[in-house]
Image (tube, rainbow over all chains, first blue to last red; front, top):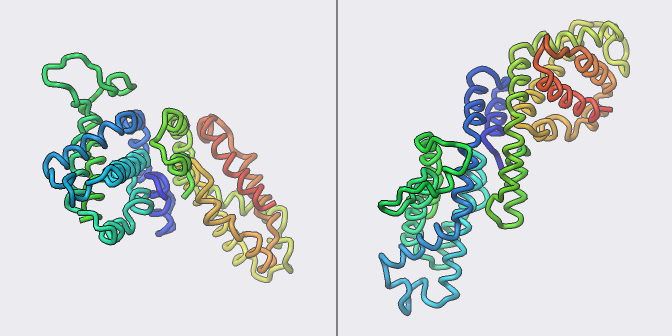
Length: 188
Length: 165
């Protein structure tokens, strides 16, 4: 497993060079925006069950055949398995976001997932759709735009955190989007 | 590779939980120290050649024949070059360790198997320890880097020296 720092070390080691100058400035920026990153991770992990449930429910609403007899979420056992998988994916995305590197997601979650789903007969199209909803949901939480229409109170977690700059979370939101996209392309 | 963040993630993953508040707090603690570590890494990246030369000079001032465990070398220049190469290698890994905030790079790329290699080549590790201690004692807080950066740098040097001892 690598994070942004050890990724830089591995890259520098390949050429036997020291980490300094430009390469170090990128990491300094990572540290400078560290609180934003922690807030983003926090906003996902504290709303995890909400994000997962919404995405699975959304997937089923769009395709109600899933919960009908013969569907892949028919029976509570399979629905529970679906929710569990959604939570696992979101958990590894939160790790990747914390580390600033996708290696933990790739190594521990996505590697072999497509084959596993194929063997178990999980419809990857539906799974990918759930992940896409999860992405939209997580981005809304990270950027603090997850308010009800007309809700003026700043009751989202970001505003309670140390970073007061929702626009500054845009880069983290797009980084998180990238991790969700990685999940989608790995299973479809 | 082991660093503060990956250690925290591995622990969270073992418990199958999302990063908790205390996980985030420990990452934050590490990021607060990161500025000092990076200052040290930056200085080291810019001056490693001179630093390594200093260690080599110190080693050869005490042991004119280089490694104590060897016969006097006919070609002192070659020995010096290899000695410097090794110090540069250690400094480079110390640079990585300062950047990652963990001992992972040192453990994985230098310390694991070091005893066996030096034993097989009959190199006396005390020579390296001597040079590293010289660097350890030479650092001066406001002159070379800030005192916090220096303590991070010294901790890394100590870690290497202890592993060789």
